[in-house]
Length: 332
Ligand SMILES: Nc1ncnc2c1ncn2[C@@H]1O[C@H](COP(=O)(O)OP(=O)(O)OP(=O)(O)O)[C@@H](O)[C@H]1O
Ligand SMILES: [Mg+2]
Image 1 (cartoon, rainbow, N blue to C red):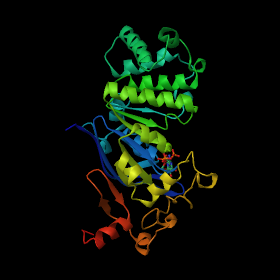
Image 2: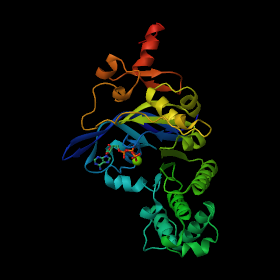
Image 3: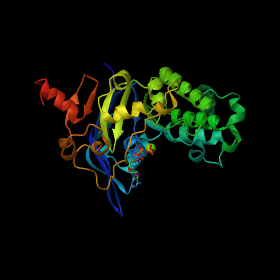
Image 4: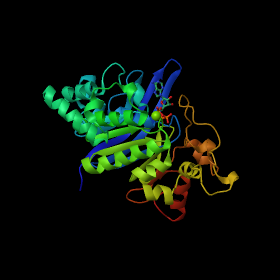
């Protein structure tokens, strides 16, 4: 069995803002083994980035963990100080952000930026670090690495800059790579190339990846497991097949129905989920999706549903599934 690299249990995280407590994560639990590729999907504001950033200690003031435990690679993250985080960030866990232009420093060359990360986290000499930087550019498919190392970010195309970001993220061979919407700022062809590159690197390097995206097509292509988030909850979790072919939460079904269908009639091409996302300052008492759910029952509005296990790898939080268990004479 492969080694467990991440275990999040009942994570609760809030932002204490002047307007009140924004309850961004409301009991998130999942785990990952070394080599797993997990997709996190969900609407804007559902807590995808906050979940991932909390593993790196990047949800600083006014954000605070208010409950639960997070273990990553032998570290108890929820007890770590900023000083301790600095040792693991960019080293054991790295992140690729959406927009490579804002994450690269415009006044330093590509080479200097990669070398800086290598020198910070390894015992390599300057000369060794430059050799490694060159190697990394080759690894991410950048031609003429010697010339590129001397260039500034603005001299590179968007796709090339994202490759550089990936090279920086991989500089210290992290155990876990977090990719937060890594391709949304790129055009479709470049998007496909970057995803292919990530897939390729993942097989070469055996690292675990958390892929955050709005795009269900991307998760279908890249991920073996999917966590569907809504209002700071994982409402459904399963293998990619389970989520696509046997979705059990009404929100997951809605997401899948909202994928544009190429061959469908115009009017049935896209079925958006109606209603407004939850106000995290005043989250509802029951299932967060209940106010938008077409199959909502009375209990859904009053009480958060417990977890229903559908297989060893598939679970959801939905009263309808509990009702089915009950009718079957199951454990509910
Ligand atoms: N610094 C902050 N201060 C206050 N609230 C915050 C802060 N950062 C995040 N939040 C809130 O936490 C919630 C979850 O945010 P998060 O960024 O994780 O969403 P997301 O699922 O990544 O959305 P998107 O798809 O738009 O990136 C949101 O309601 C957001 O407004
Ligand atoms: Mg986000």
